[in-house]
Length: 242
Image 1 (cartoon, helix red, strand yellow):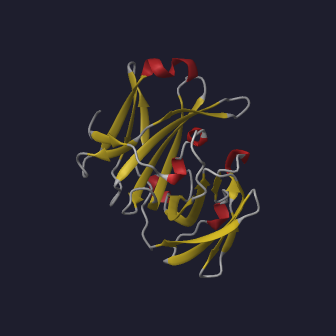
Image 2: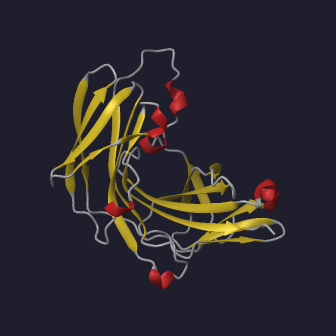
Image 3: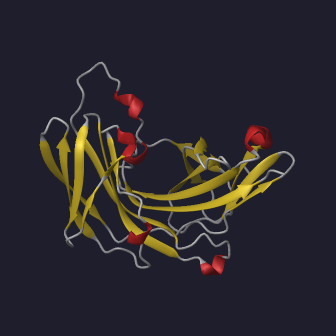
């Protein structure tokens, strides 16, 4: 592992629930798992660090083993959003991607009501709360290719409890993205050291002529470690072809 070593752990986070687990022989649960948290990214993809500052938005997610028809979230401030059906499955719903909802100030604490309608027509409501807690996106993210590996490095994020790294390949012609790697949650053994993760170059030989996106996510969890308080993301693009 380079400069900063990690311990790995897996958590039952709603956001990363595996839909394949719906294939059960027992009675399917009708419980809906919801999560509201503050999400942050950089305002620009400019590589000059001094031009990049965090912007924030509240994100919502809902997951159920029973098929859902719709999920709408209303906030105590008067906000309202209809969540998007992820992949058209009816099991996972998320806040639609919209860069206009990100602001330079951290959202205030707020209560939310999830109004959930199952595909059967049954309806239920449940509440979530966000606190005014946020994380900055990771700075100095880099991915350097050598003759033997690609080493991804970044500065530690203040108050982050864990990280994830994802690598995606983008076809230069179709622009289609393919996820080629996603780590478990990574907990640094040294919270102050620069962090790094190395990938053998042999794993990338077939995709060096594509755009590669390296994404670092930082997390603060709720006490149950099943939902988030805050998530930040930083992404860089690299091309290592000729």
